Image (cartoon, rainbow, N blue to C red; front, top):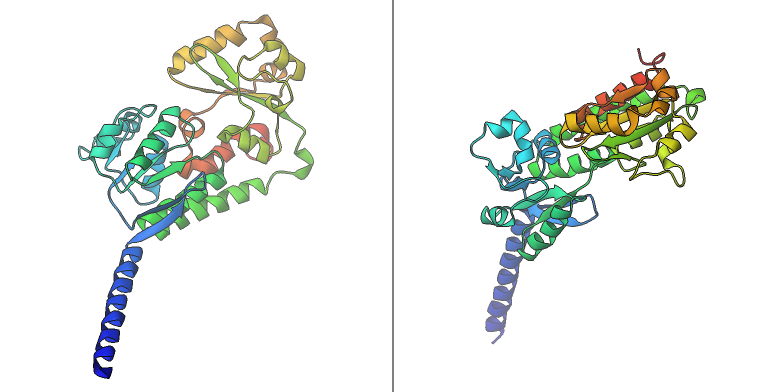
Length: 312
């Protein structure tokens, strides 16, 4: 009887060890990361089956050492996507095709937080038990956090050092040159032009965050400043030292609308920024899309404009 009990106990121990070993093996085959909205995401370690819905995220994922199996049509602006016939296009960035994404049986889908089409897709993908990483990058710190998560997924630790830490050092060096006595003295207005509208941007954008960090007052952050329908009266009242534009959609049509809405107004020529030649159209790749590896360049370009004596 005693011998039988020993044998039974041994079986329990052996079975328990086998179960624990299997669970440990399963855990070691996955990694956990936190996305931009605080969700914990568990994904297969070093997986190649990743769908990335948006060109900015494709570029960031590539910097992290990865390459998607599918993406959206806007990413075809990159030759490494356009010329790669193994990468499937699953709709446009505003409305990716859910059925095409699911048919690929991905281990992970990376998408944006702000787009309405992505918000709906996130719910559908989670219902289909497909892991989702929600991404939002407006500040450099956001970029670093997402890069860290992506390199954890790809296993490319060196990429975080070269594309993250090294860029951080360049930015810190640039910011250290700003004289404290100059911060807060100058003002700016940042606007986004569309083919049918012009909007002022107060915050939650690469440009506004850089302006805040380098000590330039953004007049659009003032109470009651009209954002969605820009007012020449409001611009004249605060008379910014610098005016910055980016465009969305058709660039030429957006510029035509800016001219019609603002520049053709006789009072436009009386603005300090206009008289001083301080009106700038910012590069789309740096300030409409995400700067990614070019974050230091994005800082430096604006610093050279607003502090020309320091950044020559």
